[in-house]
Image 1 (tube, helix red, strand yellow):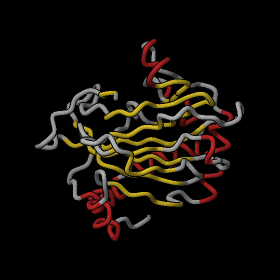
Image 2 (spheres, one colour; image 1 turned 180 degrees about the vertical axis):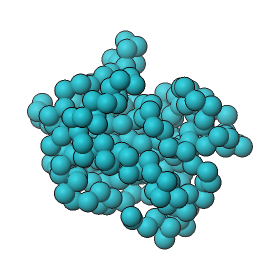
Image 3 (spheres, one colour; image 1 turned 45 degrees about the vertical axis):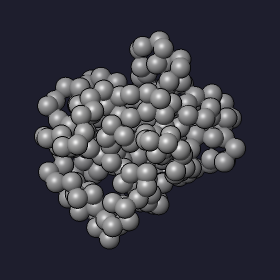
Image 4 (tube, helix red, strand yellow; image 1 turned 120 degrees about the horizontal axis):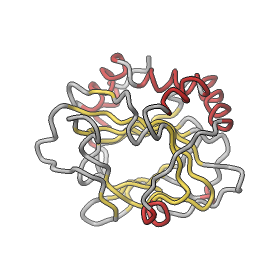
Length: 231
């Protein structure tokens, strides 16, 4: 189990909002196996709203896209499933609590909006803030964990994760989605982020990541965010 507590001060003082970038969060062997499994996986979903699909989340796919699809991950991507379960485990939640100072974190066993993400060449994810309320449970979203799984990624392919200052809309942090690079950050109505630049990778190379979201039973007292907001 990786120890995150020593990163607490840098996490909480980070700009434009609390976050940390961690290299090699996964075991190297697990990361490589995840890549192989994701490359072979076929049962992807996408958003159904036409405007979102063509303007905001272009060429972006994900799994699970329904409750039944969760079993497909467990069956067809066993290493991915093992990693998702690990990052939803109580020991890892305790590490997140030590890192962020947020108590009583709750993992999402349905992976609503999370799980595995795939963005094809020509795709993008516009700058946005995330949904604040869980779509099916009385829970409030507090943290994101993203783990990039791209063995080959060139800078001129774009696809960087960008963190923006809410007031100025200035890009403060830019993270290349290289292999086994993880990002943890607070989510709120001011946590602007996305990968808005059109991906220019070769057509056979997609941008892959694991995405896990963490919740609490009570909302952040200064935050009244509900659904996602796009910018």
